[in-house]
Length: 127
Image (cartoon, rainbow, N blue to C red):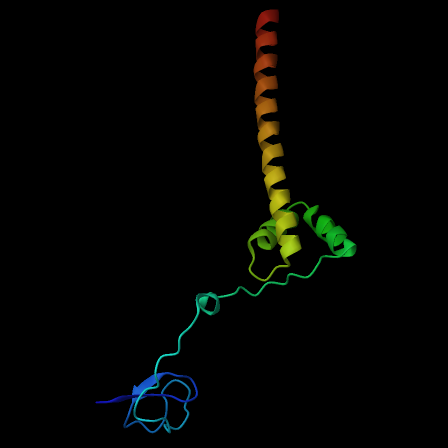
């Protein structure tokens, strides 16, 4: 059996079929498939749909206010930092906030452990 190409969606279909099984267009394409079209590397790369517009001052203020909410702020930081349809400026800001938050959390944990061990040693000397 010979194959043809749908003129609407470029799907491969049987030459005897009357309609394309993918899009339903009547089979009016030529019996010989068209020659492949050369695609450059730049056209072949899928471009993610991002909003690269600048974030206004009000946008930054509202982002900071939203991130200051106790539990919702952490969720929003991860959604905005790693979401696909997020403004690029907000995405980078949230990534920076997450990195700084992780650093401060690590410093806090090290400080609490150091102070606890120093306090336990002091209590041991007093007893």
